[in-house]
Image 1 (cartoon, rainbow, N blue to C red):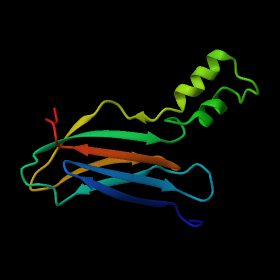
Image 2: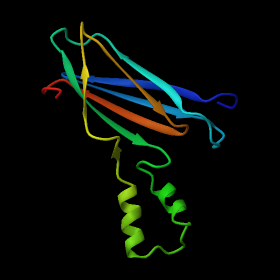
Image 3: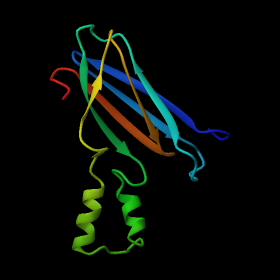
Image 4: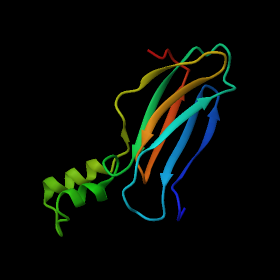
Length: 131
C-alpha cells in the first residue's frame, strides 16, 4: 500500500440480503482523490426485481468522533455539550435514507465515490418492497 491506495471489498450473503464492505486505504494517511467504486451484484434470485440499499459510511466526516474532536480544535476537556457532540459523531452513520436499487436477471449495479481512508458498508435487502 506504499505506492498506491488499496481499494477492495468483501461480501456476505443471507437469504434475502447481501452486505458488501468496501475500503479505500493507504498506509500514508495523507489526502488523496476519492475512489470511483462500482459494485456489481450477480447470482441473486431471478424473482428479485428491486432491493432497498442502506449505505453506511466511516470516513473523516461520518462515524468519526476523532475527526469531530479535531474540528472542535482538539479540546483537552470537552464540556458536556461537546462531549454529547463527540458521542453523536461516533455513531454509525448512513449516507442519506435507504434508496431503491433496480435488480434484473439476478443482478444489479451501484456506483459511488469513496474518500481515501474511508469504509462503506452497503446492505442490499430485497425482502421488502424497494420503494
